[in-house]
Each structure stands twice: as C-alpha cells, then as structure tokens.
Image (cartoon, rainbow, N blue to C red; front, side, top):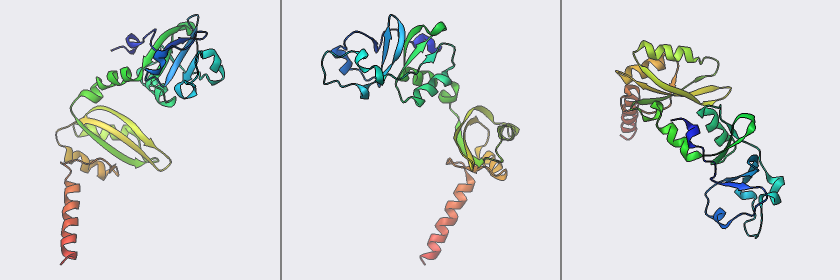
Length: 215
C-alpha cells in the first residue's frame, strides 16, 4: 500500500486565525497541525496548549510552533523515522513547492508496516551481537545463505563502539545448525530458541551443578 493514499487533508488541521473548537479536547493527537490559507505554518503540541483558556487560537501560541514535516517523495522508513524523532502521532505532509497535502496518522504507518513480508511472514527471528570492529553484513548474509537460509529482512537495533546488535528474520531448514555456525563465527546469540541445543546443554549442566551442590 502506498502511504500517500492515507494522508488526510482535514484531520487535526487548524486554521492559524480561527479559535480552537471543543472537539480538540476529544482528539488523541499529540500535535495539532496549523495552516494559513492552505500553507503549512507549524505543529503545536498538546502540552503547549492551555486548554483551560477560552477563545484561544493557534496564533496565540506562535512561539510554541514546532517545524517538522514529511514530504511526498520520502519512503516509508523515512516517514516512520520522523514520527519517532519528533515523538508525535500526527505528521504533516508537504508536496512539491512545500504545498500542504494533509496529515498522516502513526497508526496508519503501523498498519502498512505490519503488512510487509518482514512482519507478516511466518519465520524465525534471530537477534545477534558482534563486536563493532568485526561486524559486516556481507559476512553475516553470506554465512546464512551458505546454510540455505532465506533472509526476509534485517535491521540494526543497537550500535555503539563496543558491539552491533542485529535482528534477522529467516526461513530455514534447521535452526540449531545455523545458531551453532553463527557462534563459531563469534556471533553472540541474544534471542532464545527452543531448537537451540547449546542453550539446552547449558541448562542441563546448570541443573546438574545445582543438584551436585545440594547433595
């Protein structure tokens, strides 16, 4: 689904000069989108509004305007990043020449992402860590594909000077063999899996040790 088709030209959009209406209290928007003559003026957070006052309009809060927006040419990951970076559930969308197109809701983006193969396909997700110096996607993917694993998607969930943490979603013919091969190449397996014989043996050794110490 094209995310542009979900842009709403009217929802949570307020005119710069007009007073806020009572419906604003019912909205779950984190930000209200302010326009003037169909031109984008800014975003006004709910926290910045003093809703106890009467007859207030966006122009009374000009100093509180935040300027952020998505653009029609951006991809869905760029758009999702804007939602996250600005901690908002409403995102104004601008077209060519910064013309105001409407507002995108965060829930709509979640719905699109949930329909992607990465999320919707039934497969196993492995979370691995490796030192930042040694990590290379090319090595990781080559290793997985050499074991006939089909990679559905991957992303870096954490990255610092010490390590890289990566989510990988794969279809496979034998998960235990894949996990053991990853360990041999110095990947730390963060996720837990029923098929992981390494973890099973560790638990058995731990149980045996506990039993021995309690004799």
